[in-house]
Length: 159
Image 1 (cartoon, one colour):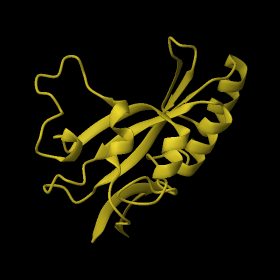
Image 2 (image 1 turned 180 degrees about the vertical axis):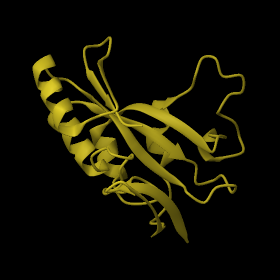
Image 3 (image 1 turned 120 degrees about the horizontal axis):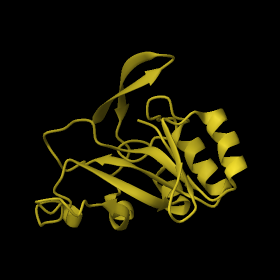
């Protein structure tokens, strides 16, 4: 079975088919899945494994040790995958590890039969560093959003 993923490369939108490798590991990210306090319906229930009933969900502050385990290709994190103009997923994990940080992103649930683009994608990193180092890195990797979080980490995010 394969999955179709669209991505930007050199300013062009490309769709590629990737062979799915193994089973999606939402069990590793489940404790980091973000659920809005304003959500009217809970994401967790009995229909899907782990109870994640949504076809889409976001996660934040995933430790790099877990992210490294997920760098196995689709339907998990593909090392060369990018979120539009972000660095590759592998590079985001490497940066987060270097700065004792974490990663964030989203998933398309493998168990939702309405979708054929199941994956886990990284779109943010949270780094523990100085303001000067964070700004220097910002100028090098060009995130769409950049700010300091309440806990002092610096968040880099790509749309």
